Image (cartoon, rainbow, N blue to C red; front, side, top):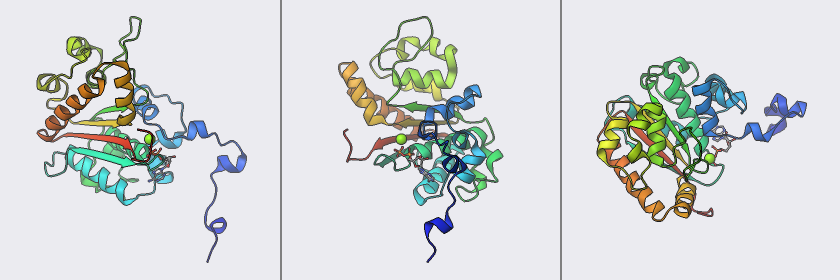
Length: 251
Ligand SMILES: Nc1ncnc2c1ncn2[C@@H]1O[C@H](COP(=O)(O)OP(=O)(O)O)[C@@H](O)[C@H]1O
Ligand SMILES: [Mg+2]
């Protein structure tokens, strides 16, 4: 039998000794920010869709089946589930899967040459046709911040801001900033007639944080998630992926 030393070649940065685990950690928001701003603080292997799929992604069964199902849903196939719950321990590949979804939602057909073993080409969307919402539950603000700049501090405000920018946020400000979860009219305004990929990473951490910041914070969060799930279920073109760390962690 061949040993791992014969069959694997370490990455160049490891051989050179320049490997930096901080820029190499898989994180969702820097990838989404890269698509919004064109700049990034993390390794290109995560922000370049071609490198990500070609050099950094092993097509595990969980990854391929979830991604295929998500993009079937977004392409309008009502028989594919609208809500996905990814639950593994830390390091199980949840954020990696969300980064893969981000690249496919953003660039779709442009990535056909590197996504062949992950999803059938017919489900690749047209480039730039899908709205991408990504929330890192361990990072987004749970309290109002000072200053003139708009910084959403509710989950629903964050989603509205990411889909429709400042204009939509201002239009919906009252509900976007209320502690009580908004209802269907708000969701219609934000998500109606759109293709939207909503990725909520580390929601158990967020529930703990919002509960510490507000009375009934996690109950309001649960109420919102229920209406979001209900809305997604009745609208093909919308997929919601929520990740929770596995049962073995602190939450
Ligand atoms: N299918 C995969 N192929 C290659 N690398 C992967 C895959 N899934 C996860 N990884 C890598 O493993 C590490 C841990 O995965 P991550 O997505 O951060 O886990 P989690 O979010 O579940 O804690 C990351 O460096 C990630 O890029
Ligand atoms: Mg993660």
